Amino acid sequence: MTAAQRVCLITGAATGIGAACAREFAAHGWQLALSWLDESNHVALLDVATECEAHGISPLLQQLDVSSDESCTAFATAALKRFGRIDALINCAGTTRFIPHTDLDALDPAEFHRTFDVNTVGLYRMTRACAPALQASGQGSVVNISSIGGVIGRGSSMAYAASKGAVNTLTLSLARALSPQVRVNAIAPGFVEGGLPSRVLDAVRHAEVLQVQTESSPLKRVSQPEEVAALACFITERAPGMTGTVIPMDNGLHLNAG
Image 1 (cartoon, rainbow, N blue to C red):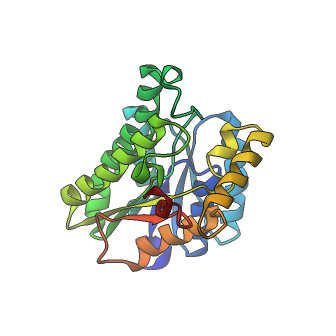
Image 2: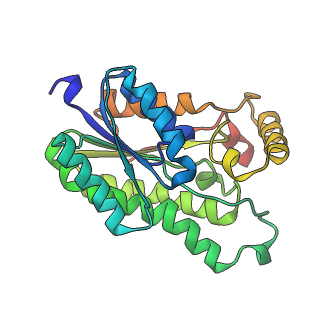
Image 3: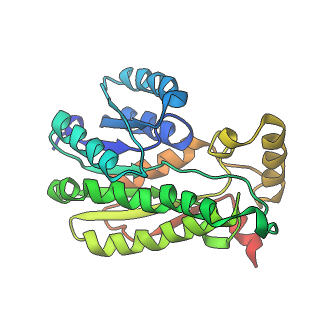
């Protein structure tokens, strides 16, 4: 298989880590299927697609709601119709709301279900939809974008941390279930500048959180989307012996958990 034949699906590709993954994989010569959720990020995805086209890539753009089985199946089917194969899946689509962990009354069951349906069940739906094609590839790879919050029980809300903890466990389960044809791994970033918080917080609150995360990190920095994308690409292309692994990429935040 030549580089030009490799096909990668990326959910949540319009912004943040997903957009960075699209640019990274395009630079490495992958054919891409990129998803967008609604009109609010469709324009952003068109800009991402233009950047990918500079590398000679003509990506497939598909609207996707990971909370819908039909939508996930349609995305996988569209990619197969366009490219004839799927070799990699990067699960970046996610959601959160900032709710203090100490305010139990503010986190109701509906918010828990909403968060899990996107972050955990949605990831499962998308992986299940792609599984037959990934297995047929013979060298399939899934990379789940998790969070260090799922390891240390911190983050934007208890629901978010719990959903990402479930993603970490699901990564191990899927790695067992889909082996030996498909490898499944996860990356657990800490705070990522330009990531999900930048889309759910106003500018003032985001700046406050950014400062706190920078100061509390042992490395006194936060990550950039491009760093996560580079690791996702490395796992996909150059780590044939890696599966069922959750990799912290948090500037040392997990060291504060003791």
